[in-house]
Length: 216
Ligand code: ADP
Ligand code: 5GP
Image 1 (cartoon, rainbow, N blue to C red):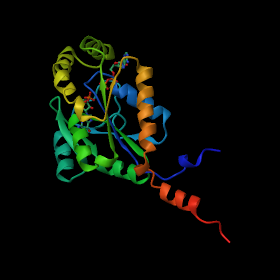
Image 2: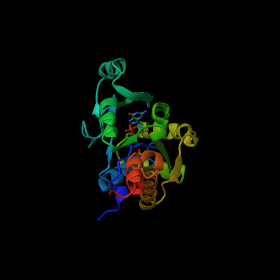
Image 3: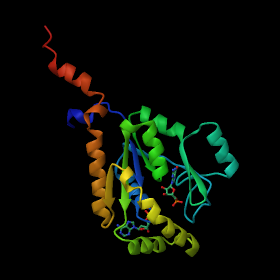
Image 4: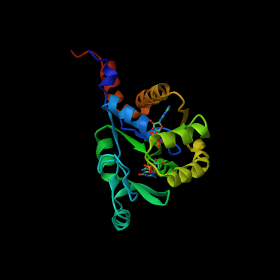
């Protein structure tokens, strides 16, 4: 039988993973999502073109600029930012829905998005930054991914240093050298953050019952 604290109601987490492009955050996110039923991906809206192999509604909701602007005007996005000349944003409704159910939400978003989520829900936002072991390895991974043109790879490399400079705006900073080790560390963070007392809203009822005098 599972122990009682697995059954207690708890508040959902906004779990943010950021990194310079190519450091491995999407791969890590996929591994976490595949192994853990209590966390779901927030699928962002973007105006950038679809990469080979990407699926609309799964990797992103791909929209044009007027549609994106309309979503901003109608307050449909929890946060949004310009990244690499394109717009990216987090649809509000699915996130609120999952959090209300006590489920966690995983965000693969940049530092601007992490900052905006933190401003809105600091108590439940956990920010994890993934660093590459070196710039040489970062470039190798961008090339190895085989999804971007040479021009785009150069743009991403040129932007990496300024992105990394935001590492100290995060709660946890991990170096993604060995993928398995890094995934293990992210899972450890999730485990510990979930059992923090203030998130276990079921604890009050549980301890009340535990301490209640025996019924006549
Ligand atoms: P991001 O989402 O940060 O842009 P990806 O997850 O797409 O990065 O990873 C970029 C490439 O690097 C992918 O081909 C991925 O398989 C590879 N990769 C990620 N982590 C590692 C690692 N620890 N060791 C070797 N290759 C890795
Ligand atoms: P890519 O084009 O490689 O998928 O993503 C480029 C960058 O945009 C990544 O750093 C990614 O984390 C970030 N990003 C993706 N979706 C969002 C979003 O909804 N909001 C913000 N602020 N950044 C995002």
